Image 1 (cartoon, rainbow, N blue to C red):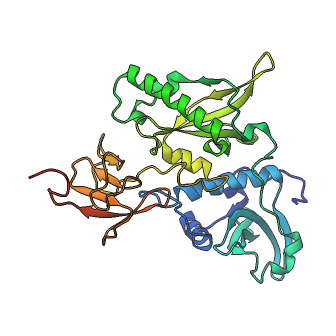
Image 2: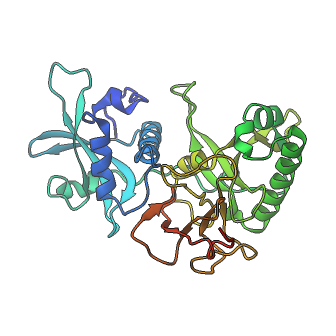
Image 3: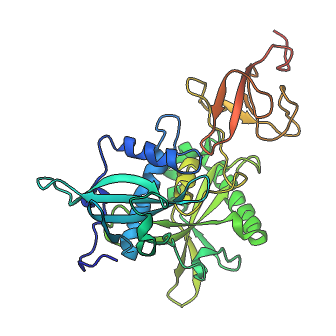
Length: 344
């Protein structure tokens, strides 16, 4: 679609000015798209910002910026791969920048397909950007292939990702066990390993790599502690295997997975402690069948403080609402000593 023949810049901000601060543009995009959580407590657009940058790199790979002659002059349009709550495509519409500016284009608006400024150009508008060919074997986990782990990186470089598991031996045992369990789950349900497309910031201009993201649970099966990155690789003998270069924190795993599609809630839903709460080791635990929520009596989705004086319940409302990074809404309840299971 780019008729100039020159490759588009890998950095979206070298091609167009998206306003300052950029969060204003992200806020408009988030308000237009179907509702979902796009960030963490300390950065409400961290997921959407990463999504935007990755989607632009895919647009560059596909050369998928459309050239449109609008009533007000030439426009450039690219598909964000997002839709409104009613299913309408959302586009980034760019118009020429001011002559003395560095970027040739600037954001006019994020808009839906039915917008009068572009609806008449329907046949010229870009289609959603396929993140990969789903016929590629890299997009589906093959349980018959061996997995080569980077143990030094996963165990030694990031001990902070193991919470209260202190010794190297215990971390190694838990890590191996979690990987084997995750592989068995992925063998039974291919959706357990989520495909994503990763662009290495250290290699600008390189093609995106297909990676599988495999959730690991160390203590409880309904809590994701890390996300193992798998890359299908060909060995010197011609046989394939999975290289696992790293394991990510749950929030980073979710952010990468969201560049392709919104992960299902049961795949990755780490509890997100509210701001100001005790976030030290052992600060929170999930409710289970043997440790039920004292507010609703349920055993799934609720979060309990280690002090037993606060519960974050998904089922019983309170004036204080909290959202996890994946969008689950819980309600804060201060507990009486008896309800908390102990006497003062």
